[in-house]
Amino acid sequence: MGERILLVDDDRDICEILAFNLSNEGYQIDCAYSAEDALKKFTPGYALILLDVMMGGMSGYKMAEHLRRNGYSVPIIFLTAKDTENDMLTGFSVGGDDYVSKPFSIKEIVARVKAVLKRTAGIKEKGGRLVFGEVVIDLETKEVIVGRKALPLTKTEFEILALLAANPSKVFRREDIIDRIWKDALYTTERTIDVHITRLRKKLGNYALLISSRPGYGYRFNIPGE
Image (cartoon, rainbow, N blue to C red; front, side, top):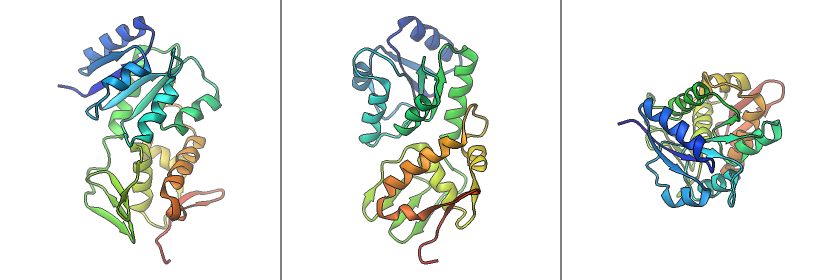
């Protein structure tokens, strides 16, 4: 069976159309017509959430914040009628992995779902752990441990950190990070990288300086003590 996807939209027609087409692609689809209902149905077994932003009651952004605050890193693709840059950055800042504006084509949704699932499959080929003092990046379990505390990183945040840490002192341009992490995903901007890096540094707390920026170039991972 294919990956399980939770589809959350208060428009039942959209849910029906997307569920039908994604099921034809081999995915297992569960529908919820509100964020509140979705949170009741949610389990860590979902591979991805397609989440409408504007719904009665709790918004999609609030639902995403709730999941991230509780340590769930399941990929989230926002579906929204809003398409300004600020709206897109809000989606990324609350832990979204992609953002699709309505109206959209079924082909676009299927392509975005496949792209996000492909890139959030993680870095499987490297295995092992990257250890920098009290900071441990486990490439097998996809966890970052600082001291004895696991950081609640999203999959995208983890992949960016793992990419930089696996190549310490190397400066990655924003477009390089997009190519490595987002690969063939559409509409990813360099500003998206800045938003994710800011959130990642905040979660690293006292170890935020492990990631530094080189103005005009990009970002690098700093080995402690060097």
